[in-house]
Image 1 (cartoon, rainbow, N blue to C red):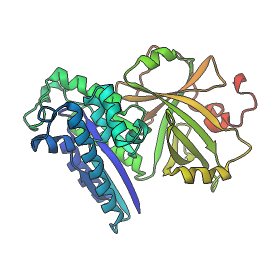
Image 2 (image 1 turned 90 degrees about the horizontal axis):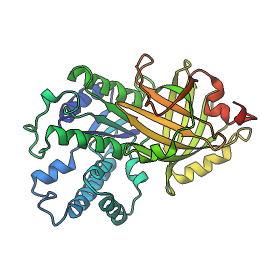
Image 3 (image 1 turned 30 degrees about the vertical axis):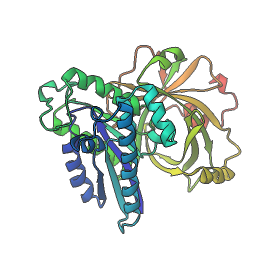
Image 4 (image 1 turned 90 degrees about the vertical axis):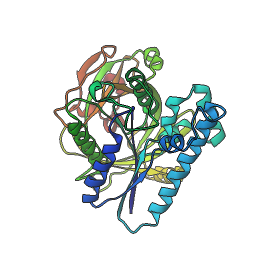
Length: 367
């Protein structure tokens, strides 16, 4: 059995309701049993439980977070009992969405009360797909008429959209679906991104890689749409000729663990199969580490720029340069790089700058 849990999120009037119908139709045809976890905020607010009816916003957010987590747990338990080989759990918004409606102090109080870290709360999903609000780029279609819980103006909706993206930034599989083209094209892009994550027809990773000058860390840390993540990457002995690695990823002492198996198809495109590990499974796999390669340790800055998700890797062995990676939906997709990041050259097809090669390079500073 394969159970995948994803989030469909986005600003107000982004098209989530229609997207759910498309997901059901598209993925049922691919053999998936599709389960939908309804939006908890709308459920509570239309039932009379809202920030303005509870004692404080913190009281409301605590109720919403606990209900949402329990609902997801119920769906996961139900999925485990089903005879289907492929199950897709689709959450209409995820738990970290709530951060966009809280102050930092309120969010910290919720995490403390529930006993969970931000990393664990954010990265408990296999993929996150953000549909950009119609208030950004398709204002003529923005409306509050189709949702009794929606009250935001165009300006408020656009600002909320930015806060939601910032809340999810740092997730390893965040995709932003903007309003370029018409609404049908928007949903077609969503379906394509979801198929890529699920490996239908096979799990592709398409990325471009750039060698850049060492970035301004203070600038990155100041951005609300940038998250810092610490990564330790260990390469395993090859499996059937395919590259295998395990990774510890997180921040502030809280981590998730994954195993990834990759095989190159072109310089830019690879088959990638990723699975979540428990800490015990991760430690057991360390026994299969390829001792001819060093561990790769790096600080990753995850940054949203327009509809693109940028990952800047800063390594301890370089003080003058870093690596920028941009994941694409297809090899012809246009890219945009912030002017604050100074590109030295593209190294997408330069094998020396792959992490697997860096793990073997005798003199990293000389590259």
